[in-house]
Every structure is written in structure tokens, then in C-alpha cells.
Image (cartoon, one colour):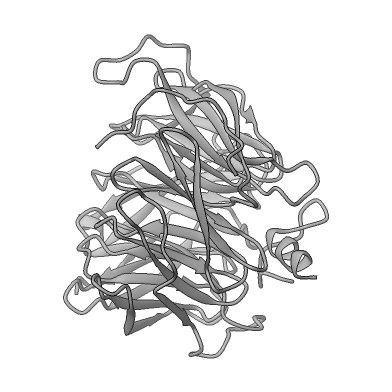
Length: 414
């Protein structure tokens, strides 16, 4: 099984893994169109106007005393992994981190959750959700307070690799990579999942160059809450749907097409909600897209470089700070993080530099809630790197040696 761009690493790639279970600055402008508890339950078995710089070594931050406004004591960190590969994890990894120093300490695992490769938190902070990235795909709910598994539901597809919670808290959205479809599940008052209410397969347009079918890679809600968007690597398309929030059904309203063979993987919105940034895995580019909240239409601009040089580097995930000033891109082949300045009220990205990630194959990145730390889950090296984020200039400084975590593919700091 091939991702249409993701290389084979260490004898297997994520897509090969799923198949086995089955058997220089660049500028682009486009036209405008409650916190969780810090308590850590025991593990259970219940089932980013300067010239661009390339590969600038990250500075190492000294140990610092807690800063005013930062939470005191250890914070919780959940870790996604694969459980069905040699050297993989045993479930959802549990850890804590120091919000001032960024240091991580392991705290066991929630067992009984198979191949939890992507994690998301309910808006109320009480329930954690994980995909089960297997041929018979599933989504699992876990109580944050007790680490108890609340149950698993089928996604109706193969190889789910992403999920998110609609901001209203009543619906879980998931993307099945291998089968190329997206699913919706209801969420009850306890946080548990009900039977699937929608399943839509991306049957049009035809797959892009080198692709054998659709490959849904992400499913998220727009900032205005009026639309949900599915990124499909296989069809080079971002699909916009309306979600019926009473029935949990989907109605397609728009399609946005990248250039053929781009392989779109991950989309993130500027906080003002009129622009979004699309990371293209196969052609190693990012694209600024205009977004119209009224219609849900996404309009991609011109592709621009990731700062990683010639060839491809399999961009994985892009983040934007909550004040809309900086964006950060994880580059798996280059093993780096690219920092962009976000300009013109979100309409423009300006490449600033890249920083070595300190690990191999950074699959996913995430901010701590206060955005003073950035976590990178490095799949091949089985580590989580942590960086201090300068809130004024956006620079990244290494917080120290990476934390060892088996086949780390997702980090979710609370």
C-alpha cells in the first residue's frame, strides 16, 4: 500500500502498515473572498522581514522558573502510537510535562486501544478520542478523569488517520485514509460515541497522478462553525460539507482543487477565519487559501516552498498561533520545522527559517494550551521533541533532549 508520496521508512511506512493489516523567501497572496484537571490518574487497562535561513540550529533553553500566568505543577500529555508494529506502543501513552521547562515524564499507558495514531480532545476537556488505524477502522472514546475506555465505534472505512470534535461537542468527525471516506458519530452527554450517522466516500474527481483512489486525510470544522472540510490526498481536493447538527448528516456544498499531484494532507485556519493554509505532502508545498464563510468555498492560491530545498520532504502538519502571527510546518523528510510570518491579515505567508526537529520523521506537531511550548511527535526515532516558542518573534528554542516514546505519531498536551 502506498501513500502516493510518503516514503518507506525503516522497512515500513504508515500506509504500508495499514495495507499489511489488511493482508529564498516565497510570498503568496490570495484574494479575500473549560481547562482539564492537572491531576494525573493512574494508567488503566480498561479496555511558525528577515531573509530565510535554512536549518538554523535551535537554541537550547536553560531551565527556567515558572513564569507568571503559567500553570503550576505537571500537565498531562497523551501520546498516539501504533500498537501493531514491532517496537510500537501498548495503547495511548500517558505522560506529564513541565509547562516552564518542557521536560516530559512517562506515566504508563491506557491499554486496550488498538493503533491510536491520532488523538483529539472534546471541547469540555472531559473526553479523549482516538482513531483505531486498522483495516476495520474505529474510533474510541476515553474518560480523561479516569483513563477508562468508554467504547469503540466502527468508522465504516479502512485506516482512519484523523479525527476532530465539532465545536458544539455533539459530533465526532473522522477521516478514513485507505477507503477515502469521512464519517460522523454522535457524542452523548457522557462523552461516549453512538452509532455512525454519516459516511461519505470521495468518488469525484478521479484520483490524482500516482494515486489509486481517494485518501481522506483530515476532517475539521471551519472557524465559523458553519461547514466541515475534508482534505483528500488521493483526489487533490478539499471537500466542503454542511453538517446537519440535529441529524449528523453531511451535504457537499463545494470542492477546492489543488494542482494535480499536490497530495493535500493538512489544513489549518487563520484565527480570523477568512484564510487557511494547506500543507501538500506529495509536491512539498504550502498554499494560502481564501475562505468564504457564507458559502463554505475554499479558493487555493499559488503553491510556495517549504524551505527544505529541492525534492520533496513530505510536509505533515501546519499550525498557526492563536494571534495569527506565525505558522509552523513539520517536514518529515527534512526533519525540520519551518517558521512563517503570517501577514496581510492572514492572506500571506512569508518564509522565515527552518529549525532541526531533533528527531526523525516529525509526523504531528501541537502547541501547549498557552502556546509557549511546541511538541513534535517523531515517528521513526520514537521520540517527542519539545520547543519553547517566543511569543513575540515566533522563534523556536529546544527544550532539551527528546523524550523517548514508542513509534510516536501524535502528541496531545493538556
